[in-house]
Image (cartoon, rainbow, N blue to C red; front, side, top):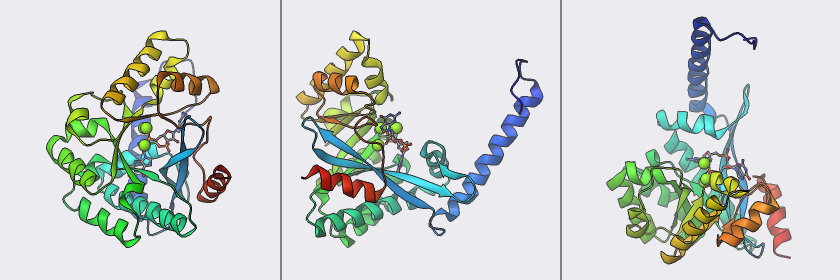
Length: 277
Ligand code: C2E
Ligand code: MG
Ligand code: MG
Ligand code: MG
């Protein structure tokens, strides 16, 4: 559609809608073949402590579609969640992460990984069994894996998700609340559930620049986290100023483009090698 100054007509809306539906069903159909066609891969983004040491890395799923190119996870993850592919994808990512951890172990590289788990996947009856089977197949110490969940999941899923969180924590895995502060916040779960870490969403990190109130808010989140013995990861650090502010607020770890963009496995290995010298 040609962009014009004219307000869109009803036809334009129909057109936009139709193409969205087409794209949705095209993506949905293609997702079903993504694993067997070997189209998925992972990238890694290190998380640093205040002294610039890598303490863990987040595993991020990527999909290289033969015609669409690399599709943004913000587009395909929700479609995968609606169509039951998410469990398959989650287990695929878990397998890649464990394989990589095993590799690192063999080379005496001591590192940890964080993986994103969809609430839809976590709620499935077969989640723990299948997840543990993969982790144990690669003989990965449970302590080296963190599972990131979004905060909405803990509130909306209520009992089954909370039950899973306890089950996984008992098995030695760390649980992290992703995008903390932007969901429907219910601070109750922070006290009641065995959670290790809050990832302060990047909207707060961005907003701190030039806003004393937002800086105060992040400081308060960090203070609350400390009182509950939780770590805080500042997400989406894009500038040196944001890094300094996040440090001043008391965040315990830092992740973002300023430190490292998500990178290929081989670049990540180079980065870790460099870090340990
Ligand atoms: P997330 O878990 O909050 O991951 C962080 C996202 O922020 C990533 O986007 C990362 O590339 C991006 N990011 C990191 N640093 C910066 C920064 O400094 N500035 C900006 N603007 N962005 C930054 P990505 O890779 O596109 O992933 C988007 C979301 O897709 C993730 O958000 C996560 O919710 C979901 N996702 C990614 N991989 C998986 C997966 O394996 N499983 C599931 N269930 N979800 C995943
Ligand atoms: Mg995450
Ligand atoms: Mg996040
Ligand atoms: Mg996110």
